Amino acid sequence: MADYHTKMLIIGSGPAGYTAAIYAARGNLSPLLVTGMQPGGQLTITTDVENYPGFADVIQGPWLMEQMRAQAEHVGTKILFDTIFDIDISQRPFACLGESGDRYIAETIVISTGAQAKWLGLSSEEKFRGYGISGCATCDAFFFKNQDVVVIGGGNTAVEDALFLTQHASQITLVHRRDSLRAEKILQDRLLNNPKVRVIWNHTVEEILGEENPKKVTGIRIKDVDNGTTQVLETQGVFVAIGHKPATEIFQNKLELDEHGYIKCRPNSTWTSIPGIFAAGDVQDSIYRQAVTAAGQGCMAALDAQRFLTEQ
Ligand code: FAD
Ligand code: NAP
Image 1 (tube, rainbow, N blue to C red):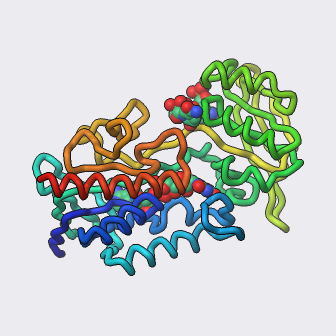
Image 2 (cartoon, protein in one colour; image 1 turned 120 degrees about the horizontal axis):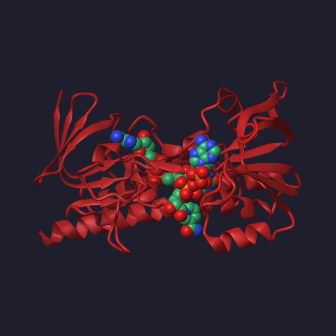
């Protein structure tokens, strides 16, 4: 068990964390980055990435994250495979405890622990994830050109996903568990007036149906919540859009969070409610949730922290 002392501790190894590391290392802050249980973050669970700027050809998510890791290391970041489970931010320097038993004493912290899409919790959903089940329409819509797809959910994300999918798929069926949408009215109007979209109200998903060879989704079985009758919808793609959960459990009652658990930052900055602690990426962003925006915020967090240290 060791004590590490650093000017900057970065928690999380997604695009936000690695970008913060690149900028901090080049600013001579000798950052320490703790990877967490998913080294490379959410992009390591996808395949093709076609919207990260700088690559004319399709690249693979895990490859992109490997490149970011290598770049962060080459400029001087120390990367440690550990997960932070407790944090004392009552005074500076801050102290973080890793599951390894190691302690990280840091003058500044960049939190980039990301957010995970919520899932329905069906075993068939798990089985077909990546084979027709997606949690990210912006990322995967392109693969469903001229196909029939289903979106599950009734919030802004589900409605925005369904609208985005109209640019690619031939028909979009939104399945929602209630008789009204939670999404903003303007989005609802756009959705309900789009001829490519139909909504099935008051239904929950009972099962994802599919084939083994090759592995692919062929439909879903949905259940009417009022009378219990079931029906099968044929579809090649299912977009689960029932909300995201930011990874902020360890910061509860320590940092200001919004009502959905995202870390609150001052407008146009990465400053959290505690001076010296900065947040970047999906952990503080419930709206854009893209690799490139997370990377941009990682850059902002490193620059904010550097200015903070200079002013001290
Ligand atoms: P994340 O990538 O979520 O990384 C969070 C990091 O924090 C992880 O390394 C994790 O191990 C670490 N962590 C969490 N808790 C702790 C802890 N307690 N201690 C230490 N570390 C911790 N975006 C695009 O722009 N293009 C795409 O094509 C695209 N495709 C996607 C496909 C899928 C299937 C998914 C799920 C998302 C996709 N996204 C895509 C979205 C993109 O992946 C995210 O917006 C981006 O990864 C967010 O980056 P982040 O750095 O904020 O967090
Ligand atoms: P959300 O607002 O929490 O909505 C989740 C939706 O999924 C709800 O309609 C909910 O149903 C449904 N749902 C939840 N669990 C379910 C389950 N197990 N089975 C079936 N349906 C389920 O999540 P979100 O849409 O991702 O939005 C999160 C936050 O980000 C919100 O504050 C939102 O405004 C914001 N956001 C904003 C924008 C924007 O401004 N353009 C875009 C995206 C997101 P019920 O309605 O019955 O609860």
